[in-house]
Length: 85
Image (cartoon, rainbow, N blue to C red; front, side, top):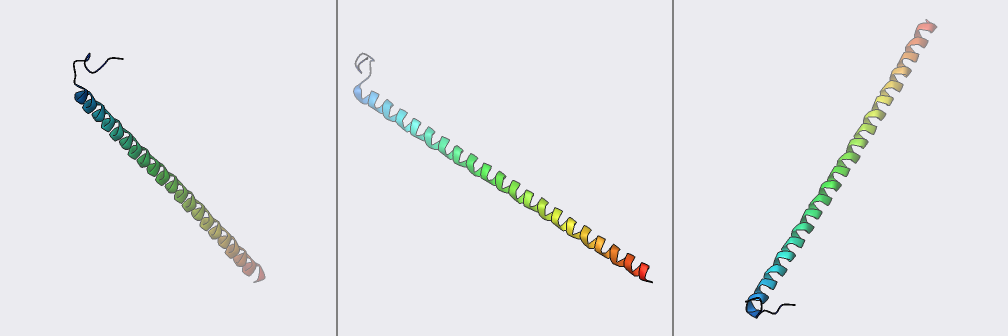
């Protein structure tokens, strides 16, 4: 391993470079963590929107089914009325 003297740098200069590199790596790690958090929130929001969309679809389907049943009931009532008279 090379010493600070063989690199032509003072030990203080090398220590300063090491500290700068540590800060850069720390900043990079924090940034990547923020990106991961952002991506996780984005994914959760997309999943929530899918669930809401699915519920809306199911609700619309159930409402349509209720309308069909009511229409059949009314048609049967009308048919019974016509047949009775």
